[in-house]
Length: 252
Image 1: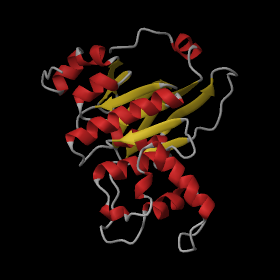
Image 2 (image 1 turned 180 degrees about the horizontal axis):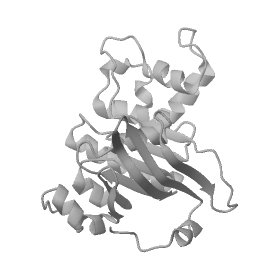
Image 3 (image 1 turned 120 degrees about the vertical axis):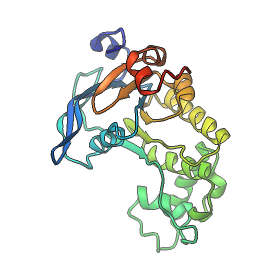
Image 4 (image 1 turned 135 degrees about the vertical axis):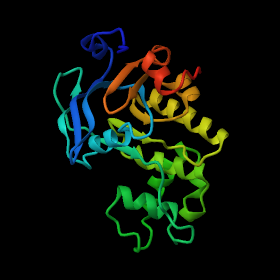
């Protein structure tokens, strides 16, 4: 197994918080889908999960989100005080099933996630301005009144990213967030995520199949196939025999 050449306590000393996944396992019926997964993530780092189809990547995300039962522990510790805290997670799914003709605007979608203000009520000017300011961070404030079903893939992902970061989470989870987006949109999205990570000192866990962009932007890479096969920098993982076995000797 390839490991980062650092002791966890030393790594944590340079970061504001540490998220520890310890011995996480998931079983469906008689099948063990995840087996004893342990992982540390720090603020200001992008950790990317890679692996073959059926490796358990989305299952791991669902376990972190509390959507499925699992064994093991998830700990969130503030490095400065050493105290455990509740982990606040922002999440951008792979896709949203929204009919193109549904009369829901970006404002309606955003408001439904961050407010209890019923969307069939007249717009709240205060909430409208708050949402517009959040969208402005991602340069999509001009689409606040546009129907969600009419958005391009890139626009929708920027909206979902803006929602996921309101309020600012401790961990941002991105499950293959660029499916259906063209090549330029994919690169723009990775650059945007990289900027958000640096600016807000975010911990980000991302599932991706784009090995070239993973090499360019990831701080850590984890190769998963029901259990962790190797982990480390992109260079360390891509040179590992497990990577070459799964990806057929692909060089990136």
